[in-house]
Length: 245
Image 1 (spheres, one colour):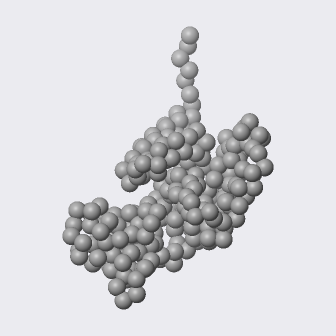
Image 2 (cartoon, helix red, strand yellow; image 1 turned 135 degrees about the vertical axis):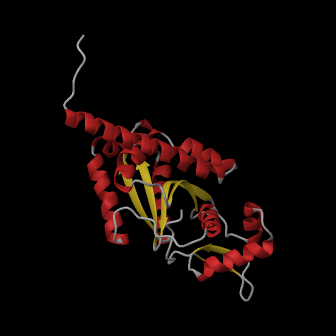
Image 3 (spheres, one colour; image 1 turned 120 degrees about the vertical axis):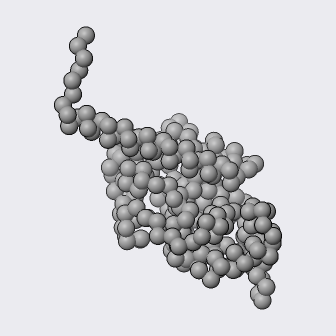
């Protein structure tokens, strides 16, 4: 059997694509590892089970080719629902001034046989997200596998229309410690308290308060409770720099 000799342009293209693939896999593993370290219990279990074949395909074939990083993108993100419980969305893109929900929808037996109660519940879930200020995008798995360019164009249009760019390039002026606290606030379901920051960073509570005050002054977080004395914080949707996530 003869060895196949490819033209030089095909060999260059192959090595280029191979480099992109390796870069994706390395970044993907680091991104998953980062979020796994920040979670425990049900949130960790849901993330490990939720990042399935469809979600991986979306990241590999749609998100990565046009964005080339996973900053500000959160997998299996926990949100409050209309019944005061919690639910998980496939991906949350958290970058001011918007909170964006990205969901994968497969058309399999489980989708065709869904009962009326679950069908209505899914619609109500989306309504509640939108009432809470989320912008919701849904992608069919068939489009992710067969019409990647169309899906990529939606992501690029989202970036261009709402953020004025196509990839959310980093423009961060925060210190390392401020970034770590901001990431902690992004991954927390409940408002962030100085005690939690102190435990996470291994510092004294009074020092944690100083870092929280600094992030507040920079518009990254805002008070969630308290009047004269603020006791907890949440991310500020109008903040100027969420590119740290």
